[in-house]
Length: 230
Image (cartoon, rainbow, N blue to C red; front, side):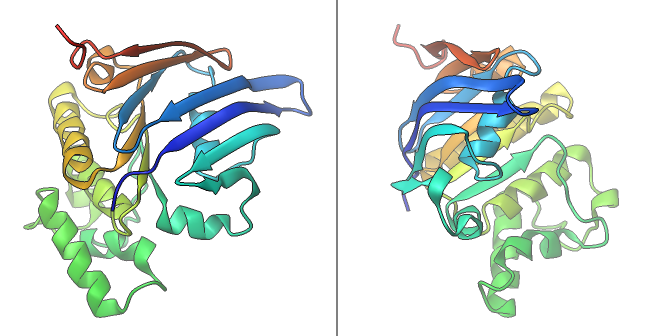
């Protein structure tokens, strides 16, 4: 399955009954299979934009079209979140009382038979380098290993769009680089479109393109130095 094309068109979002403008007439396009880094200062609107694209919230105005679906007006946003888009957060949000293979199965509950869920979860953990840690519980895993479980969980239903909110922010630089390499491999091998929020210039430089948001406005968009033609 190919990645999702994303079109954000003239989106506005405010809070506190309009007193706080989080996004001001934001437009953004992502090609299928593109890895885009979204940067900018804290409070600039990065997470708000991710939440809107992921249908965790609705815009006040504008359109958000993902894989041909108008996300803002979808009647069944839960199905969209289950089948089209997935999140990876800065903090893995694993359930500590479930082991790794059980955590990865969570998005598949009610969608696949138990045996198929377990088979796929084990397969995904192997792909992220945790084939020997499937029965470990989160407290016994390192930070990088927990984030790998979170990525495996995000891939459970073959999402076409992956929204990663500071996935390396709580990790040391070496472990963060490994997680970024894993995300790039997901893009390369699966064709998944990835929008990655980061405040780390080194992480952003690994993306196909860097977009900056500040005070609710997209202020710049440029090709990554790593990808730019010589």
